[in-house]
Image 1 (cartoon, helix red, strand yellow):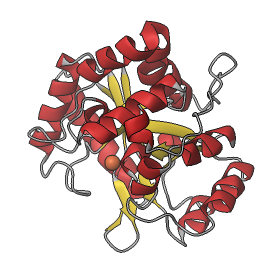
Image 2 (tube, rainbow, N blue to C red):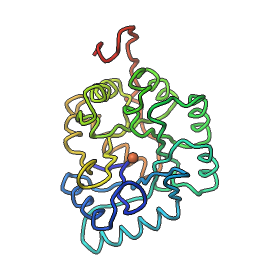
Image 3 (spheres, rainbow, N blue to C red):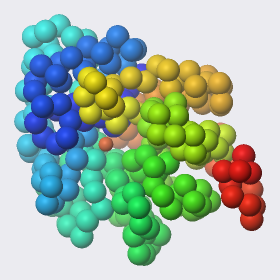
Length: 259
Ligand SMILES: [Fe+2]
């Protein structure tokens, strides 16, 4: 398995505070069957102004320590980019990090309000040649209220990453149910840890992978943790010929009660 969303680099954001904690996270991931990760520290211009060169340097330093400690864990550079007015310019002039330096971008939208004009924005983003993966939309309040919105975005070519802890119910039954519904409707492309440390939000995928196998079977579950992450690493588009999204039923009842 390869984790495409984790906060593994020390001291850059709200992830591990020390190199030793980063190494402990890597050991924990290896023991869980994860063989590598794209390190995705937050980028937010005011709070975490992590730029591509800083992240590359931090990846280089951690990679050296992993080798020195003989921890069999590969890492690549990336970033979790917040929606911001400077985002497009930062990508265009290379200040901001894409996933492994390719065309894939991990984008986090606001959790509590739907940004105005977001459909146009996502469309323009796709047209600019970037592959786009949304970080954990199952946690966005407006997707929880109206999952069909996400269906429209996936039809537009946006990929979706859900978080292992969400699927396992650690963020409540409603988010877990939404994860299940999204999986059943082929609206999920990646399952990742979004890990931040060794005590909470840990770098574990195996249990969530097994939960995904129960829902969609082993072939499609492997897409989420292996095939699709590999495509990101090698800078390819996803092969989705046999993975077209299924429409969510139109219901006037609360979708949560409906399921
Ligand atoms: Fe994250």
